[in-house]
Length: 103
Image (cartoon, rainbow, N blue to C red; front, top):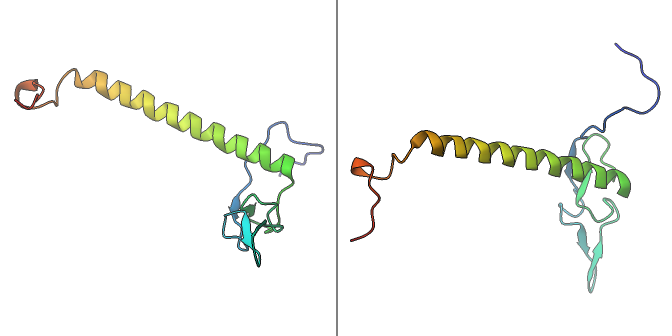
């Protein structure tokens, strides 16, 4: 096991789960109006291991890391679709490779 001291060089995605108090909505119903959930700091997410709310600056970092990962996955899927369309080369439209115009 490697021992390290100090902060890590890269931010890691920590596992998050839905807040059990507000059920991931970030708001709880008061007597007359909705109020922000204090258990999750109105984010709807808590730490998976401890069940405590993350600090706002840490939550922003975690959400940014997740958003970046989803953008990368989206770009990869788009690239795969473009490659698949190039390989089809006009096939798959219908009998004889013709497009159906509804006539």
